[in-house]
Image (tube, rainbow, N blue to C red):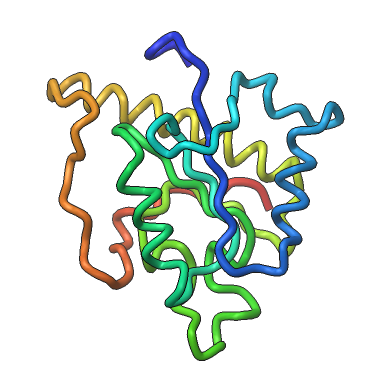
Amino acid sequence: MGFEKKSPWLIHYDGSSCNGCDIEVLACLTPLYDVERFGIVNTGDPKHADIFLVTGGVNAQNLPVVRQIYDQMPEPKVVIAVGTCACTGGVFRECYNMLGGMDKAIPVDVYVPGCAARPESIIAGVVKGLSVLEEKHRKLKATGNHGVPLEKPKAFGTYGEEDKHETAGH
């Protein structure tokens, strides 16, 4: 990770979940798993974030919040969906106000399945996200577009299959 000679900053948002994945995300920050060894810095400000790590699914209430966080992040940015709820809507997907996984609201780059996702899988997803981030940075640099959004946000609906990249961990 040497494209900007800075640590990638990560923002975490929990959509609508049971909070099992959130507990595992917190475990990643403990000395046992130590995600910070990869240079990750946790932030609460989307304007500073390079990586958007989301847990839980999208519902009618949190849809605007998810999109607002995503839209405030500078380019290049990576979205990592952690847990079955963030990937597909999970056990809550049939609820009346659930819209599904995060890809119903924003483009997702890395999927980390599991209920709850294991810390090792989350860290593997973050590491995969770092390589996706570096590739996006190379593309931005090649086009001369630095920090300017590449596309207008899409209207509500599922982002196309072309936006789905990889699944990390199992």
